[in-house]
Each structure stands twice: as C-alpha cells, then as structure tokens.
Image 1 (tube, rainbow, N blue to C red):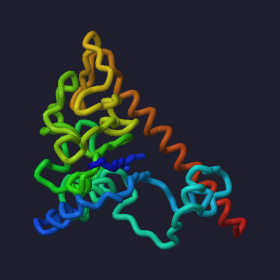
Image 2: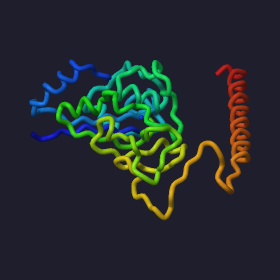
Image 3: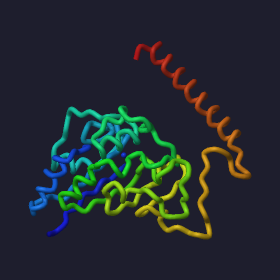
Image 4: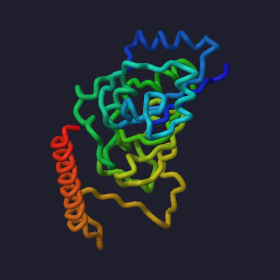
Length: 236
C-alpha cells in the first residue's frame, strides 16, 4: 500500500486505546490525502495579506487561503513557541503541565516517548511522517547534559516522526545547529560543540554584553513611552 505523507513545518491529541484502534482501522483507506501542517508562532491575525495586512506581501499564503478555507474566528493555546507546539502535537493543554513554558536551548525532550502524539496517530494510519524547521521542544533525555557531538538519546524518532531536519531550539538560543534524525547535520568532528548556560567560556565577556543589552532595552522603552505620551497629547 502506498504510504501517504504527513509533514509538519514548524515555523511552531493525546489518544487512548480506543482512539488508537480507530486510527488503525483506517489503514485500508487508499484515498488518504497528503497532509502538511504549517505552524508559525508569534504570528498575529493581521500579519498576513489575506487577513488585511497592508505593509507586507504574502502571495503564497494568499493562494492557500483563496484555494481553501479562510477561518475568521480562531483561538490559540499560546502566543509563544514551546507551549503552542506542545499542545498541537499532544492535544494536551500546555499550561496543565509543568515545563511547557518557553524552553531553554539545552532543554531535554518535553514530549516523552510514552506520550501518544499527532505523528503517532498518522503513522498508525499508514502515513510516513516528518518534521522540518524550528523545534523548540527540547532534545535528549536530560536537560543541560546533551552531548551535541554524538547521536542524541531521545529525539523526534522516539515520538512518531520517521524523519526530521530541525533547529535544535531557536535562532536566538545555542546550540544554533540543525539536527537531522537525532544528530547534528553535517557534523565536523574537528570542530566539537560545547554548550553551557551555567558559566562563560574562556574569553567571553558576558557581563558586558548583558549590560549593553539592558541599556538598549531601557532606551527603547523610554522612546516608546515618550511617543505614546505625545500621541495622547495630540488626541490620536
């Protein structure tokens, strides 16, 4: 039987025994469509042209909207990456489980192999599954103890994905590497990877970087507050 494809592009329901049996009973259906799920966290309702955005062009998303269904009333479990991704893949309300807030770059796997995921559900229906893009749900069996120079002891293959090519966390958290099937993609053994969220490496000046960062943030907030006061004075 031809295997159909589930692709989750992460730009971001827990089933009982009876639900698994129901999913397996669908294996005989030869007309199953390919499924692509695109998750973009931190995306506002008005950020897409097909939803009224004026200052950005989104022609490809517009085509998807025009050829499909455009929903006008939607709700999200969270506006940030980790909890929204966790809930999408498990069907569990993220805030009912500890450890589903925005994950550190060296977090361990938040979704455990014992949990039944959306990928597991599709696999039980005869689909081949893969995840591409930003992950930000942790990797490895223990947070802060990953060896990024070796295959990770827990990765997406343990929660229902046949293939994955993902960012280890997110672009602003180390390690800034891509992971392919549980191993750093294009790994170079002559440049070993070390990650620490506890102490600086030799030569780093983290205290100065933090001082500059907060100085910039304070200046930006002062400018925003001043602009807001001027708009109020103008009754805009």
